Length: 362
Image 1 (cartoon, rainbow, N blue to C red):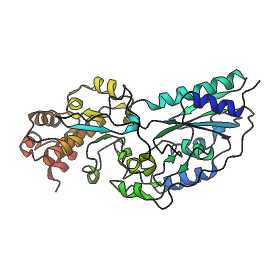
Image 2 (image 1 turned 120 degrees about the vertical axis):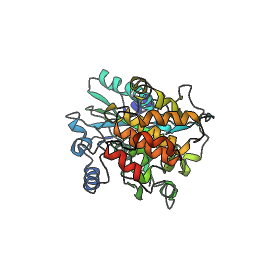
Image 3 (image 1 turned 180 degrees about the vertical axis):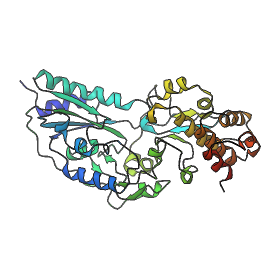
Image 4 (image 1 turned 135 degrees about the horizontal axis):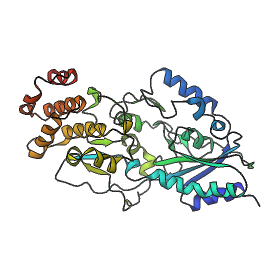
């Protein structure tokens, strides 16, 4: 007998999902209009995720012709932060990247896909891809409400979840879904918590200001947000940390594999390119170019390091001699911020305009 909607839902919950909903695979026309409008305003900056091809990411049939339904799941990754090591400058990693939470999500969605295939239907697991607007699917499925931070908040869980779906052509008996009530009400804590005022209206993010995006963006890091970056080496959790639903329940202990909550920026700056990609390649790195890891590490060093630490001076000296102008220019900014102006003599006549701009920046 073909699996029922409730059986599919139970498969997901038993596999570790915190919420499962099943909805039609009709196009998300209103969401497509919103994406295109925000893209036209430049709010996406150069971000490609779902902005690259809104016609595809909002129409499931572009991925699976004949698609009828989405089985949408949420995986809860809320954990206690591991203790912060002491004794050296450290980069803080956003909680969604401590471990490969999307692997856990895909593994929990796969039993649903397997059962649908066993019943003779096509089924595709979609998670962390450009193929589908995951938050819109979760909202349609009644998994949560749209928060002012633009995240989906799951009742009783909060926004610290990753979202994915099983897209299928199975003729499921899709239940009527009642949208989840807006739990934010008049709360604006996420908006006021953003260190760069990137939440420009409830649910509207200007990626040009968002640190979670800027640490992934190509090119030079915008000067006006370098100090606001603080110790963030990858991602930013400030809006979610300020969100009351995320603080209601006690966070679970971190899993044994959560060894990337804090990373040594001195180690990053000393490592070779292959070592950097081996350790941090799971992060989104533009063109998988380790230069961007070094760029971010230099900014964290500038914002957190003890200028009297000889290891800091040595890291800056190596970076000031780096063959890439982007690294030398960010090293100049870091040295000046730390008051280590004596290190800059070797680049006083650097041929790069990018470096020269940093040398004379007010």
